[in-house]
Image 1 (cartoon, each protein chain N blue to C red):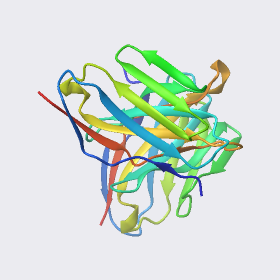
Image 2 (cartoon, each protein chain N blue to C red):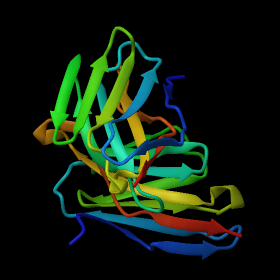
Image 3 (cartoon, each protein chain N blue to C red):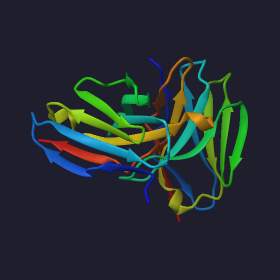
Image 4 (tube, one colour):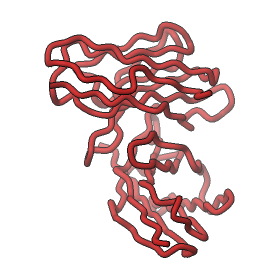
Length: 115
Length: 111
């Protein structure tokens, strides 16, 4: 079974729609992250959370919001999707309690297309 | 702006050869360094982490770190076609809570 799962895996939506991407993990890790990956631009951090009460903006948070519903769940929302948010989105986790603070483990990704 | 630079490739090596992947970073105070492998259409997979100057070996993989030169590399011995992928270098800067990723080097191992 996958340790980090993301739903949906693929999504096509229209400009202006609200969409939520969900991430769940069974690794027991305390830290969770959302990235997007675009061809030629690499992986860029959107938001990160070090525990349920800690949410931080990353490099490119404009147009996105997040919710950490539980230690194992971290959701990313696009309040009003626009075409340049078309990308591959990854959730990742890491475990500060074991000393691997920044050894991040990625989910399978969500391919989002905004038309 | 903290930068992590990698040659985009593609780097082509024959099967059985040593593949050498390089990464430079701009933040001199960077503390932690990671190599990820990403197959086309898949998610990044952590291969190696290195925190101290010198070499760290894990199976066919060796990570090398030189903080004075701000340089980290990944060597893959006895390269196999299954090693064909994009390799991402990631760096945690001083005082940062984030990883900065390079854009990756595409490796092609030719049978």
